[in-house]
Image 1 (cartoon, rainbow, N blue to C red):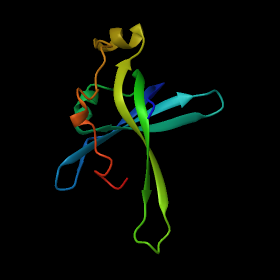
Image 2 (spheres, rainbow, N blue to C red):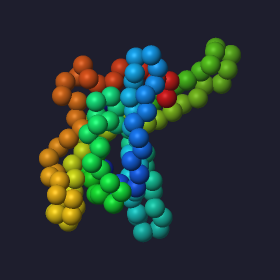
Image 3 (tube, helix red, strand yellow):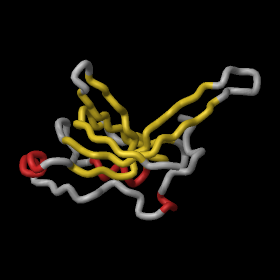
Image 4 (tube, helix red, strand yellow):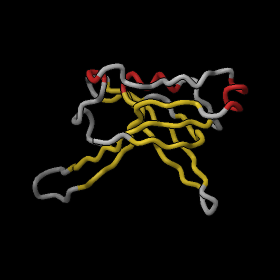
Length: 128
């Protein structure tokens, strides 16, 4: 599996949501990218302990996110139609640009990574 990265401006930081009996946590950050013709809004998921790493992010912050793309197949039963979902799971992020750091007083030290693979989400934690 390959890891990717992208830059964007923070458009929205949702509150952390908790799912299931095991307390699986997920937090959505929507990045905005303007390509000149239209604006692209890209939802990026921060999972488990990484949810807390985005507490200080504000709309307008420019960040670079390292991520992996996950795909899932979901089927209610053997006779029903299969549905396919894709998600972007953030592994870490960095604040970009001196302007952002000067305005916020925050550093651009890497945050939001999984310190060891035992923290990384299992493939079957949630159906989406």
